[in-house]
Length: 528
Ligand code: GLC
Image 1 (cartoon, rainbow, N blue to C red):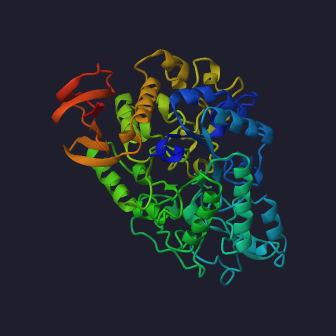
Image 2 (cartoon, protein in one colour):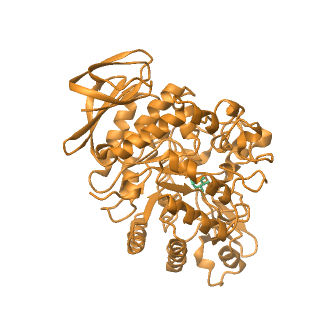
Image 3 (tube, helix red, strand yellow):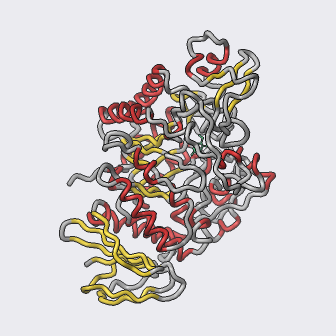
């Protein structure tokens, strides 16, 4: 079997504004990332997914792109980018770009043209509608507040924006849009990019009849957007045709990876939807199942959603696993309630499942959610919905490198406040401490790399108990057993033969055992 980097490796997501500031303006940048490549190599990762670094007016911090083929000056230059790709390549690390297909910035030249007149050739590149009886065309709501339709006084029509009004939705029913976007992909592949993460890829096509979304009955959330079932503004069948063409293009360049953000209805688990975008192994290479967003720290729940995820994929494609990203409260806070032992267990879970694991920057040192006062909030979601939704800034605080001021992230005041725990939780301290979270991640990734059964093998869940999750990873005659004790008390496990403990979240000595007593929240990996 040949090792395929995106299948058998580990991917690390960087939120560039917050990783490392090399030019002392308080905002992370490309050269900052390049400076940290040795750190990432030591950690053992194989690919870096960069949240958007294209030119952008930053209404949604880069997810509103005004030029897809240039770097925003806040992050550096195209030269810096090429240097990053080259330095990453030397370390066998692939660079993955974040591709925003659903919408552009309202300042993108395409949109400026489109809105200039009804007969502009780019008019149809976006979704325009005259409205109904001087009212909005339908009941669709924007994820970031209010209606999804904005009235444009110049041409007297509405345009659609599923996010902020500075993010008009592209019309993917127009073949020229596809052509232009595929050219963008070519541009980055020609510049050495090895993969793409596709932003809200399941949103890119809309119902051609613009039918109303049905409302859910429960009133649980102040965002009206979340009370709708997104039947007509997401998951339209034609998306699959686009993805087949996309796959064809990527495959023609060699081993280029694609991973889709396939977003579920708020509060719902939709593994079948996420898996559907893998097609018959002829659409995306990977897609995210966000069932892990809406979960508590429970062996039963995790086992059940993971089994559903594997069943949804079957052998049509390859799974991926993610617990944290730039849009959600960090898993250590959300699921583990800031408990380090629980977080280590989650790390073992993430890195020993079958499929590609995605680590979010700072996860490896146990960075927790920031507590950001309203006056410092930057995220449009937080600004709009405070205090019901405090926004996404809490998961975007500066990376904690050391105990110097601003956590070694920058010498200038960072764009978001540094977590006050940085003097205790940082890379420099943890690299000196054999029992730290970071060393644990390193060992875990190294172990995963060294054993085929862990990075490529099949998975089989074994009957555990209500609070112990037990599974096997198998490759030919090699088997690893993973046991995760979700309970706050000790739990005894009997294996059917002698096993060797390869790694424990309690730093136990490596021993051969047939029976093992797991400490509270302990995670162990054993070989048979
Ligand atoms: C995705 C991104 C998020 C962004 C949104 C609009 O959900 O992950 O950060 O705000 O799309 O592009």
